[in-house]
Length: 465
Image (cartoon, rainbow, N blue to C red; front, side, top):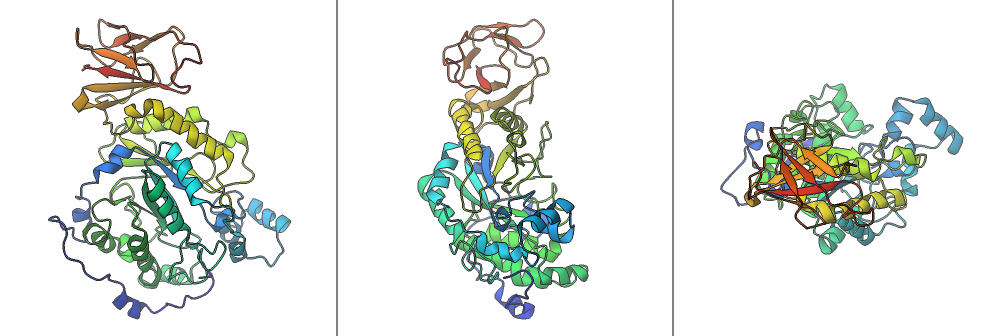
């Protein structure tokens, strides 16, 4: 659907009859009611906490101007920010509309298998693709987004299906989808908004049918909601949809959802909490959470004008991952492909670097638990994870001490039982128990080429308290 046109299916009463999916028999002893009290009591599927690391992919029509931000349309048309207005004046004719970017979103070089191989090499355990951002363009042939979707316009391909098949056939990653509840300039949303959301034309004729369509057709195991448009969850019927998702849907047993299901629900309701973009509290939270962040510090979508200093280094990314996991979170690291479907070399390099780091140190990340201390107070930039069943604590240190001695203030050694190893090195290391608390570990003397990795190291401490 072109955003300025009224959709064909603007018949809320008719669609209200069509909306509920056919009832399925109960498949689980636990049934969830359409209330936050009931839904919030659902146990988060274990795979999500074990995964620790995922890839976010922001791709859409905003990748065509690829200037400033994925919020390009809003900043240009609504806020009229000068740099966006000037960009359009300098590069496009005066009559050019945002919809005219649609046919230019070609995805000409998009190769889902190639993407899948890069994601597998990154060490990530799940991906989340923007199936629809706030601009309303769907990366699948949505029946409810006529003429403003990837089948009718631009790629003329079902991007969501191609990536889903590649991920499931070629990798061990879980497939997830981001979906924006609202659309900036959709006339039905704007009409509902002007009624203070007493009217519900937009969720009934657009949002909810598309959500059912996505889940039934592509079976995402992460459903990453966003963009409530200032409307409460009752307007979106979020609890009704989530009850169906958890009780009846084809992914009811494995799907995880976030906390962005209506104004006021963030960091309060839902499966895992995101709280805000780039959320990294630096301390333990009582609820499972995710740090969604970007390699490009300034944008989620691809920017042609980005300079090398705008991208986080691999050292900074490893630090983000380690801090996040030590505090009980997952890291969702974002890349922005180009309009023709290529992952730029800087993003690919960061992904492959993270994968090479995780090949050595993944034992200290995947399937770990938080420890009694998240970071060390004696030596900065040391973070802890644990595997209680194996009696293991991992001390991940981001700076190699020039003295060759690493002081750890929190682990207490057990004489005759404690063992210390450097991941990727393997030989037991010498250590000394300190009088008050902690231990001093004698690190091996290695040349730069003998180092197990370049950007952060992990000690496996067996039998410490």
